[in-house]
Amino acid sequence: MSVDLSTNIAGVNLSSYLMNASGPKCTTWEELEVIGQSASSAIVTKSCTMAFREGNPEPRYSDLPLGSIQSMGLPNLGYKAYLEMVPQLKALGKAVVVSISGFSIEDNIEMVSAFQNSDVDLIEVNFSCPNIPGKAQVAYDFEQVETALAALTVLGDKPIGIKLAPYFDMSHFIAMAEILKKFPVKFITCVNSIGNTLIIDPETESPIIKPKGGFGGLCGDYIKPIGLANVRAFRELLPESVQIIGVGGIKNGVDAFEYLLAGADAVQIATCFEKEGAVCFERIENELKAFMAQKGYTKLIDAKGKLKPL
Ligand code: RRO
Image 1 (cartoon, protein in one colour):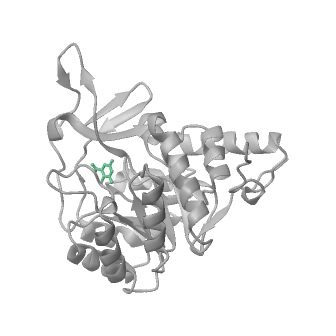
Image 2 (cartoon, rainbow, N blue to C red):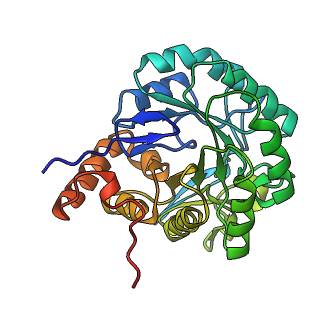
Image 3 (cartoon, rainbow, N blue to C red):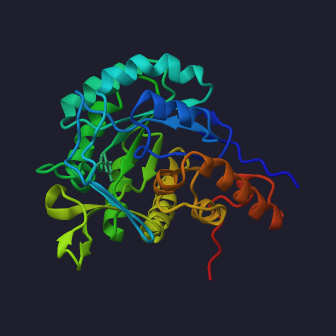
């Protein structure tokens, strides 16, 4: 039985359900080219800022048995470099998603405006980087989210989405959904890493990463139940016009299928891509197809959002 994993986000056709997440191995042209040549259905860039950033001091990434912890600190080439790269990225034949992560509304207005006038397919505004010393995550400040969306959603016709932090309380899902409904936000990507977690090495008696006293974003298997709950909660609270890209702990076809049941329209892969490399996209795609075929499903819509009540 053949299974069709093609999907569409905000009018942009994607050949499969899986793409890379803004995060690992998507900062330089060389890294983005590798994604372009893989089975990822889109090329998502590392979040960019107004200027080039080296990022936080090393060690800033560590593998963990069930995922990773990192505090990269937004290392990126600066938005103009990605803007210039857009024609070459498009030439790789896939949807191009730019992630932007300014330090102020003014930064984000300048960057969104610039990409509105480019050939990128989708703009993902990152409201949830947890790793900049002294900077709060916008996604946890509902007033700021509302002000930012009012300014960013009037800058052009290209679809805009936002990358959200994980939420842990029903009142926060409801408050955020109410804000999103006021603006033409076409998609949300949830979740970013769980910010400000601490892993301690009892032998050295130190944290295992250096920035922020060892506090960093937790990723991978640890956060899959949180990602699933965020996708599910927002799917139930938002109208169909807001699509959902799921991310958090997807490392095999069954994980991707669980996000499909929760209601995700597409999914992104971060930690597994970091650990396994670009071959993960084809492997997970094949596993998802095989699992769906076993169940008699031939397309995403057969299972999308169809989590069964117990
Ligand atoms: O670069 C980072 O430290 C980073 C970013 Br921008 C983000 O959005 N999420 C994350 O876990 N790390």
